[in-house]
Image 1 (cartoon, rainbow, N blue to C red):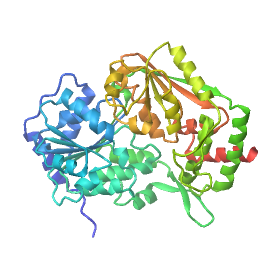
Image 2 (image 1 turned 135 degrees about the horizontal axis):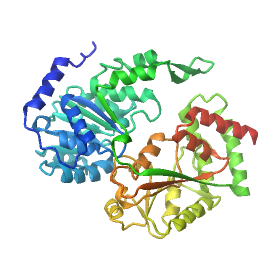
Image 3 (image 1 turned 120 degrees about the vertical axis):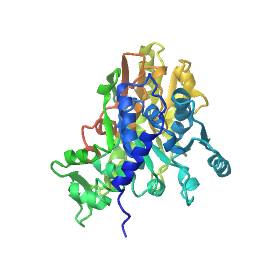
Image 4 (image 1 turned 120 degrees about the horizontal axis):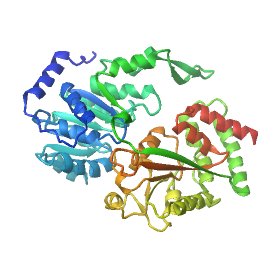
Length: 474
C-alpha cells in the first residue's frame, strides 16, 4: 500500500504552531531576501531553499529556528558540518546549543545522546547512526546541500527517506538542485513533499516529463530529454515549496574568466593520442554508458595534466595509487606564471588527482585545505596558496575573505562542483569588487570537452562523442 501524501491540514497546523510561539528577533544584519526566506520556512513545514552559493542559507535557517523546531538535526558535507555550522551558530544564534557528532561510532553515539538544540552530523555517517532508531527525537531535519541526495538508488537517499518520512519539519538547502538535468530534482523534492508535486515515483516523473533521447539496438535507453514545455511546468509545480533566489538579490563581485591554453610536448602528444585510440577501442561508438565512458577518460585527463597512473590499464580498478609515468610539467609552469603575474595575491587552487596535489605541495607557501585551521588561516590572509579538491571544498565553505584569485589547475566532469567551487570566492561578503577565475587547458585534449560541459555549452554525452571522434582521427 502506498504511504499517504502529506495532509495539507497537518501542514497548516504545523505552520500555525510556528506562528504561535515567540520568534528569535531577526538580526539586523540579515538582508531583505534573507528575511523573506525566513518567512518562507515559517510558512512551509517542509520547504526547499534553492539559493545560489553565497546568499547565506545557513544564516537563514538559524534565524528561522524557533522552540517548535527544536531539537533539530543538521546533515551536511563533512567540512561544512565541522567548520561552517559551528562558526555560523556562534555568529547568528549564540543562544542555541549544539553537539558536533563525530569520532568513533561509540563517540558519535554519546554525542547523539546529549541534550542539545542541534546535532550536527555528516551525510556520510548519519545513516548508520540514526536510521536504526525507532523513534527519532528530532522535530526538524535540515538537509544542507540537498543535491547530495539526488541519487534515489544510493544508501544515503534511502536513509534520508526513512528519517524524513514522519518528521514534522524538513528543510532542504542547495545552490545547485539540478547539476546534470531536471531528473536530479525528483529525489530531492520527494524528501520534502513525499511525491505530492512531481509524481509518486521516479518512473512516473520520468515518463510524464521526459522522452527517451537515445536507445541502443537492444532497446536500452541511454539518456532522457525533456518533453516540450516540461521545464516550465516542473518549475511551476515546485515554486511554492522551493524558494529560488538568484544573485540579483545580493551584492556579488564581478567574475572574470581567464583561459590559459598550452600544447602538449611531442612525446606526451603521442602518449595521449595512443591512449585516445585505446579509449575508442574500450568504449566503442555507441556510448552504452555515459558514466563508464567518462570514467575511461581519466587516463586522457592524467596525460593532459602531465602524468599517468598505471592502475586501470588492463581492466584493473582505477586508483590514485601505484606506479606513475611522468610526461610533462607544462601545466605546473603555467600555474607558476599565473602566480607570478598575481604578484603575491593569495590564490585558491583546485586540483583533480592526488598526483596534482603532490606536485602542487612543492610550491612555496602551498597549504592543503585539510590541514588543521587552514580555512581560518586562509581567511585571515595567512596562506599564500590554498589547495583544495572541489569535492571536499565545493559546498558551503566561506573562503571569500581570504582572496579573490581562483585557479582551476585541473577539472573533472561535474558542473555542480565547478559551480560550487567558484562560489567559494564569488559570493556575498567578498571584499574585492572582482574575482579572477583562471582555467589551465591542454589544447586539443579532453580538457576542452570538460570545460564545455561544466560551463553548460554541451552535454556530457555530446562531449564524450567528440572525444571518440578525436580518437578515430588520430
